[in-house]
Amino acid sequence: MSVLEQQNTQKFIDLEDQYGAHNYHPLPVVLNKGEGVFVWDVEGKRYYDFLSAYSAVNQGHCHPKIIDALIHQAKNLTLTSRAFYNDQLGVYEKMITDFFGFDKVLPMNTGAEGVETAIKICRKWAYEKKGIAEHEAQIIVCDNNFHGRTTTIISFSNDENARKNFGPYTAGFIKIPYNDIEALESVLKSTKNVAGFLVEPIQGEAGVYTPNSDYMMKVQQLCNQHNVLFIADEIQTGIARTGSLLAVCGNCSCENKCEKQATYAQPDILILGKALSGGVYPVSAVLANNEIMNVIKPGQHGSTFGGNPIAAAVAVAALEVIYDENLPQNARILGELFRQEMNKYIANSNIVTLVRGKGLLNAIVINDTEESDTAWNICVRLMEEGLLAKPTHGNIIRFAPPLVMTKDQLLDCIRIITGVLQEFER
Image 1 (cartoon, rainbow, N blue to C red):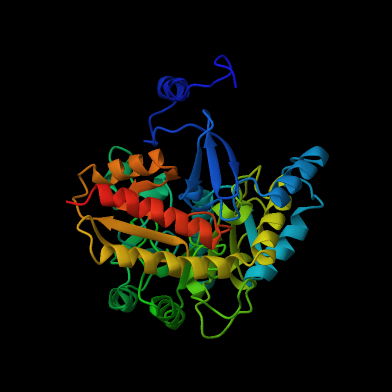
Image 2 (cartoon, one colour):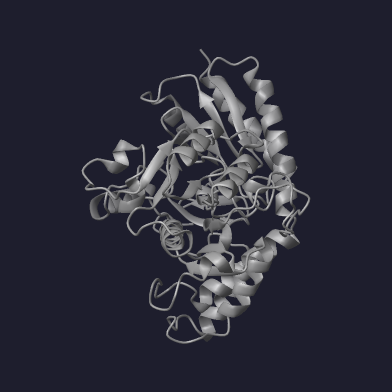
């Protein structure tokens, strides 16, 4: 490549800085190509992707089957709105409901839209089916949750950076500690207008906090006892990321396709997004059974792009890749290897206090304060060594590579990670 052809990283960073809103703080790398577990910057350097677009790229960058589905459908029909039927949506709806064991799906575009949709369905169900007086429904949520950044969602967030100066906030939510079944039971017993409990099976943005192994089963049991909808936000944790098709399932025997095993948690409302399209197109979905979903009637909720032909075709291909390539099993095996090897390092480390996670959704906790820049500096050094990861909450580094990663690639990444950490040992 000639000097004239070479693209300059700083030029693209400066363009975003000048013309884009400053609502993100990216690492100083500019990417222009991706394939499998790798991405390349504008100057040709290759990196392992250990963020996977916050678990949207579970199937790997630019998976050929998903890209082919996108191209094929884009050449035929892109958008009809829901004013008309199209020949892709019904096929997709049948597949996803069979795949996850629900009667119906309401298709949307983004994760935040999915959460908003689930909240609306839950409230409508509460008024029309449970008999709660209109405007009185309460939804229980967890401290340190992350469900998006719409006005309603930040109303029940603990993140003051996301909340401050965006009020007034939406009422109707009760916060309890995460992974505290006694707190949930106490609210359910003492509050008569509870419609639902919205929870992440693993709190990813909060730092990959993984609850007790029986927490989700106990949540389901309590919600059933009190006629309260159990709403699982699996936007980041679902679609094989944690070593099973859904994180609420644990490492269940269903493997790739849901067979509603009685010994595993089954939410009343399931929210999916991100990897539902393999990172190729914005696709999200809310799934529920008929007695819940049928409260939605024509004109009461929708989206111009929700359920469009491209989204449907892409999502079908993305789910087929999960099944055909045994990605839940690969995530489970490699995740165990990653935590095993990191724990070996941590045993003699002063800079890392612990590793936690499930499947290939993991995080390490850096031995410094949330206000420090140590985790950021570690991520910069990882970038320089060819691996991209990002801090969360100041002193936590999340590691979530594409699920198509091989054992040899993972071991190479562990070598890079531990080598950089060694530089920061005190």
